[in-house]
Image (cartoon, rainbow, N blue to C red; front, side, top):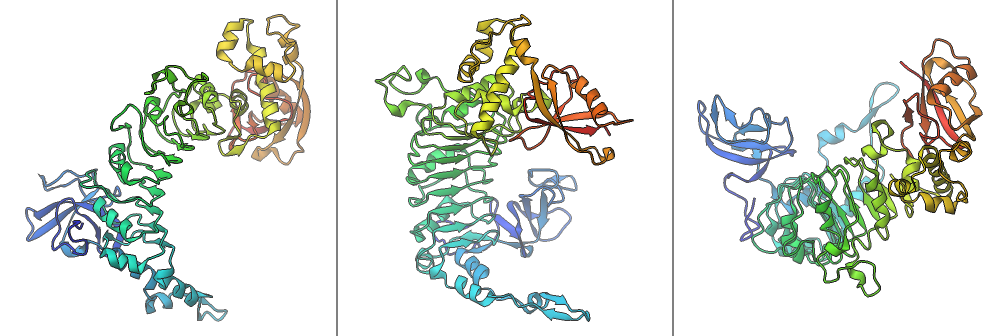
Length: 545
């Protein structure tokens, strides 16, 4: 790794903390953790802790002597220095990627066998034109230098003259770690707006502020960058619109001078997928980023979400929603997409809270217990009905017909289970009375009398039954009208009769629009309406293996 005082100088020897890759294998990247003798062997060795699990042979100890502590049991190796590379400059990597000629061995491997089993050389159509185009560096607007061992920038002026029009640069999986080197690269590329440093182990220490003033998209996935570093960098990123921090083991959001993250005035997209955030209070710290439109929180450890209490925000106003309040104090005021897939959310109160986000329309909840019927969650139609403004759920559009059907099914489900306690219904189902009125069901009253909701719920529904079991053979799907209060166990028996199945133990699945997988109907005592089976639903009939 180079120092900022001389970005063109390569190191004379390896040192602890330096990023390296195995010679000839630029994707096998690691960090030097030890340089010196190893007991029982001559000469000096370099102890490397590799980035990928399983690439080493030990944990930093050898023959009972510990030389360093590696990340894992099999991530470390002792290597002779001639088997390691300290990397190349950005411009050297550019030459390798776009101007290197194919070797004779590579070209000899490009052939097909003729009918007489003779090799016929392949010539790629347009190959020379493409090579010629990419070799004119001054015309490049996009460059991908992933996994080429870039460890230092090279002369800033030469970078500028070589790549005057470069707008997008991918430096994934290289040996860069010093923010000063990143500053030199960005200063040398005045038109650069998108920079990808994924899988580069960036230093947690920022000695002086790098100049990233033109960067609009910054990708720092799996770089180890925590929010402390982002706070230190934010003044250097006055125009950043997209910030990607996937897989960085983030647990805490640590604003520099307030309870809430400030600055980042142009940020529209924040990607925090695959981190370790477990409490919604950490996410609330982003609620005053007033241009934030998309927030990615997939695969964290969140178990509950809620809309922030405006009275607790770090603002002079103590009320939210009054006419005198400044628009800027509304939490998450521009957020329209919130992706929460693969978390641990299991309460419907979290789902209901999404109605409070003023502009939220695109939501992902797949992979949470609350959205998994098999884990005690609810069906897709319940989520659609409970979130009023949602236009997209789990990547699928929620159209007007699906919304109407879902809301009516939801109302009927609630009416079939309620006990007449109006306050309890209002607490557990905040949209119930609103939806009854919208769909003209307001004259129905939730009571325990047989002439009330149970009579309505026991009405006939039309469902399509399809056999999908391997031993059932090809059978024509059937459309049947059944009582919505029929149980799953009753429907299984009916399927045996309808399809004349013998020696088969059926299992049923509900195929729902917008759901990637059918939902297993495993409770034989549950009624169809309780499980969300409504008019025009499709039931798949399979067999227990």
